[in-house]
Amino acid sequence: MSVECKEFGYFRGYRCYLITLKNQNGYSASFTNFGATAQSLWVPDKNGQPADVLLGYDTLEEYADGNSCHGATVGRFANRIGGAKFTLGGKEYKLAVNDNGNTLHGGLFCYNKRVWTVGNVVDGDEPYVEFKYTSPDGEENFPGTLSLTTRYTLLSNGIKIEYMATTDAQTVINLTNHSYFNLKGEGNGDIKDHIVSINAKQYTPVDDVRIPTGKTAYVAGTPYDFINPKRVGEDMDNGRLPGGYDNNFILGETKETREAATVYEPESGRFMTVTTDKPGIQFYIGIGLSEHGKNGHFYDHYTGLCLESQYFPDSPNKPNFPSCVLNPGEEYHFTTTYTFSVK
Image (cartoon, rainbow, N blue to C red; front, side):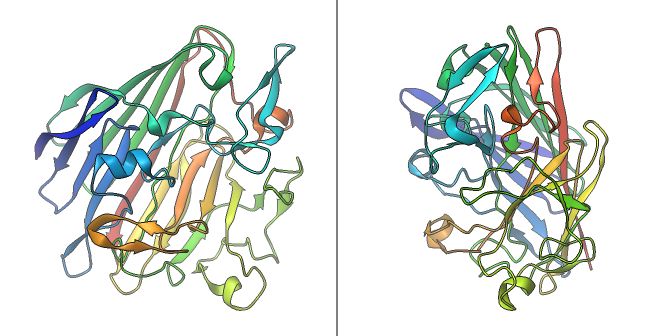
């Protein structure tokens, strides 16, 4: 096991670091306190050859200027809040409009663009690094001061992400990690031939600006049915869902850990399992990607897929959805793992 730390640059006068965790199984992961971001994840294939399976950038400047939230901790509320407003405790909070009249991923200058403090960095059989941030009351017009921690642990066969938070006033919170995965290795084409399963019998239908209607629907008989593994591109190629996926799937009760999804890439043999205790997971396939990334690679549409554990989109405005409200004296604490094997 080893832990390495080097300077990654400066953002608005704040020093940023790149911290790399390695183990003896050929796994290596790098993280930066800019956005509490997973910058790389090297995973062996069926022949024992490692590749970086995360899309991202090579430099701090690219992370600062980029629009894709690669690998970042996203919040205060990940995904969308309809109409860029919500009511809590009888008070309406108006938020920044940054996505078709809605608020996406917390606003204009959210957690993926903040410099977090490096907390504990621990070596050992399962080394980990913690990033901490205090989000003040009124930041992006959300109520309450949040004390946040994101902890990344390098497991023997993947990574574990823990999100922890407390507040001094009632607020809403929905943190996730926005990593784009390509199990062939970043920059190696699209993910339409990745074979995905999602352990969800229902999903949340959306309107034309991707805000949930408030209803739930069964996946059976629809392009959203991933109960049995299938190619990401199957229903895109046959015309049933040509635009692809950017949808929330319903996993079950909050705080009940379960296998949420799997991803298999036949060429490399890499097989990824996602577990979480969040009630939902967003399946997004990089519909909006169009930019340069690591190693001079160009990331076009569908060159990475996201499986983002979460509360449901627009939960602050949907009382029938699992509650995303955090009160003083409570702790927000959720865990998501991405583990790997080969087939």
